[in-house]
Length: 115
Image (cartoon, rainbow, N blue to C red; front, side, top):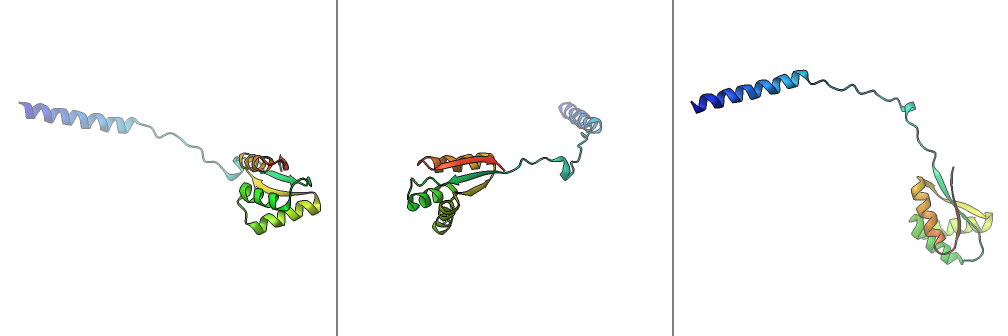
């Protein structure tokens, strides 16, 4: 008797899942064109000349802030010295703000703006 009940339960269980599968609808998903996605313009961190730090201090802080080589740090420091400013980072707002905070932590003059 018990095996007959178990068999009937199994049959009913399988039938219930079959019915659920037949009545479950697949949700419609709209496809997006590349033109439907809006990307925010990149941000930039600009380092300004302040004549209050040594080249070595600026290079060291640039290496910390943007993980650049010492050579690249010197290139950027000279650009700031000769032109008054240099874009040292272009990217997402949060990353540019982080870089600006690292540079400003020793008193360097920076601006972070949307490009």
